[in-house]
Image 1 (tube, rainbow, N blue to C red):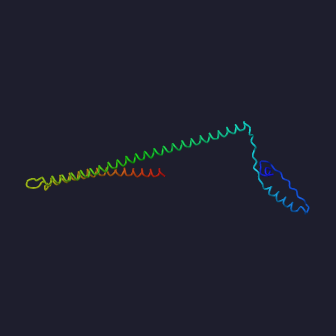
Image 2: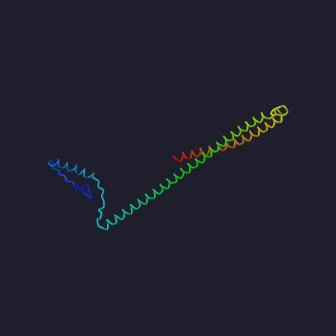
Image 3: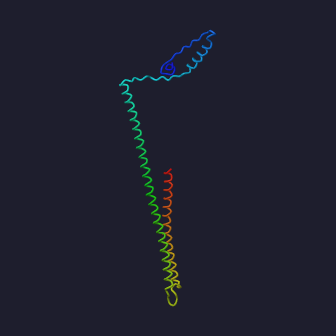
Length: 191
């Protein structure tokens, strides 16, 4: 009865009961069993032919399914490898750009320091020359022409220095902005 109720077949059940009062208990048990048997749900499965031809076609279908799975996995891993290579190349490029920017910034900083030192050296040299020159009992630095020449030279040097400093400062700001933009891009890329 187990194969009929839970197996792979269609089952019809006929329950018979007796109207006699002597069979009352047996009739109640029969009705309970029929009610429980009625609630059993079967999922029928087609019986497969186990011949060699049927097994061969089943194996071929399984092989084809496994080949498709293998092909899909290879394609996915190729795409993943390509994405990893692209990410690594971008990171390498970003490090290279950062190195170039830092080097350029250091170079500009050295130029600013050299310009400041040159300015200090020139001012010191001018002061030395001022103290050495004497004209007609008067010191040369006390004459109006000398004062005007010094003032002109000082203005020219200041303008030249300011021009150089402003160019270097503009370049430094540009490089700093590039560096910050690069850092933002790298941070976004890493997310």
